[in-house]
Length: 145
Image 1 (cartoon, rainbow, N blue to C red):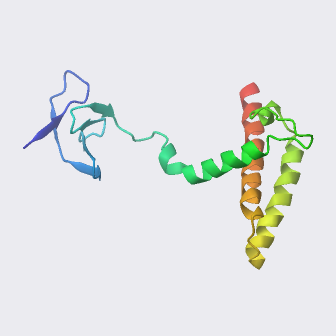
Image 2: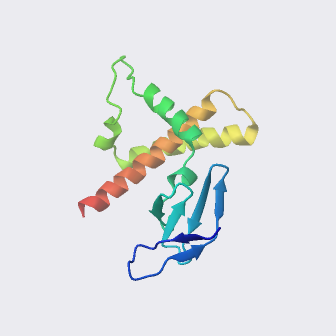
Image 3: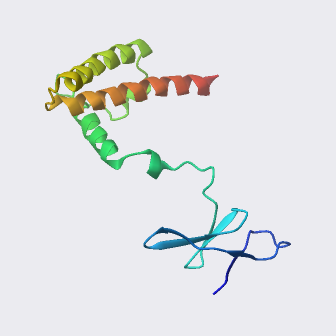
């Protein structure tokens, strides 16, 4: 069977394509110029080329652990619950840096001396929080300029 793909341009002829197996459930047939794809179902999409691959870049395990950590950190010492996005209001960059160093030192000590206890995940999540917060402040600054 010969499979053809339509690039979207009515002046261009249909193009013969080869199958590319993505996984057991999905076969994609890209056009030769990689401008579109036609799936076994007949559905078509533009190429993934140049698009952000969040599924490839991020770990759901890490994001889930981080969300648990962030939820735990919502409780203040007096027992009050702060809003989950409270940190987006703005924390001084030097505070992020100081906290980052403290948590990095704990991770480093644990890694170096093999003292892995319940706190290692919390310190890694705290590092992630501080890195994200610092980057958030930098990106906000860029948006305001």
